[in-house]
Image (cartoon, rainbow, N blue to C red; front, top):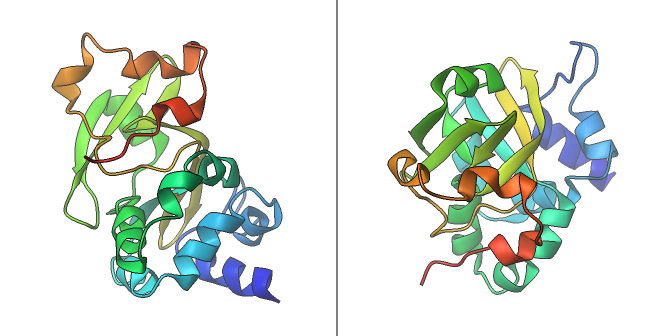
Length: 184
């Protein structure tokens, strides 16, 4: 029952995967986004913030991403969680094709903070997180699955990437936990 409620919640902003007949229920059923869906539905004010900004683009961390950031996320208050996860969404519909064409862009999240979208070597990244399940599209927006929780302090402008390893993260060895950064 709880999974059905979470799937319904997600369906407000992401319902089609590959074909129009495959819905957001699959996003919930595949088990990769249960922790994200729980935060979305259980954090006071977060669902209202997200649902009042349709159409939108949402980046959802996988359960593995939550595990990697658990020491940081576990210590957050409800209001801090709401801010962090509202930072995973932006007004408007943006697919991988939009970001491919731009190369690197800086967009404003629902919190008013900036996020960097960079497309490099076939990978789309939001700040330091890599999109691993792109373009789950519905009338109200688009959902992209990501491999890290986007935490405060992880933004760097596009101009800072020219001499940075941030765009080659996917080709280097290391753990995702190593790249989780807290705002100090």
